[in-house]
Length: 200
Image (tube, rainbow, N blue to C red; front, side, top):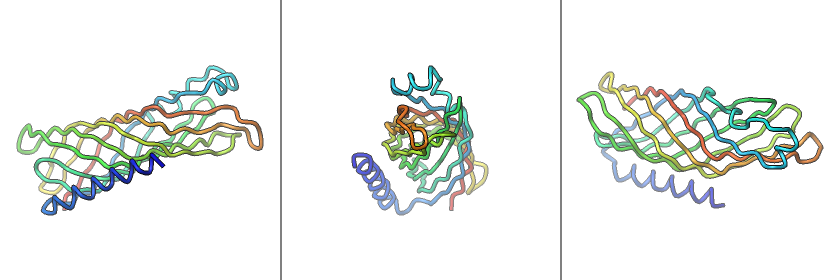
């Protein structure tokens, strides 16, 4: 319930901000990047499967996303959905983020800007390891992002960014119709990404 309230608050803020900035332009983006997660194993899982590096399950794995929001010369408000999955030492995880974000711009020239801001929303973590029962959980996600935005035409721009999120989503690992082996908890994720943006 706390995670749902966090998302609702973030989306309410995003919606209210967009309504206030009614004169702003709408923009949409497609993003591609690489994500690395910090994943904590429970003591039970550590004893069940041995000292496997759980941080490597999602480690520099391909991440795709879409964004939609409002933008002006000073900043932007937007919603993002992205997903990433990875496999390491027989463990497979999928992470999906739904975020509301706000960025401020700092112009370097007429066509180049630095940006920085904050994000809040939800992260869904799904465990789908071979030979194990599928399990998923939704937790909060809060974090910061920054980067550089380059205008390439009146309506099109590209950006290089970095985002860091903290989360508490966790999943359980159990054999099919068997006993629980332990749990995995996502503590943080870091993403470097490229984005193509269109303003209309």
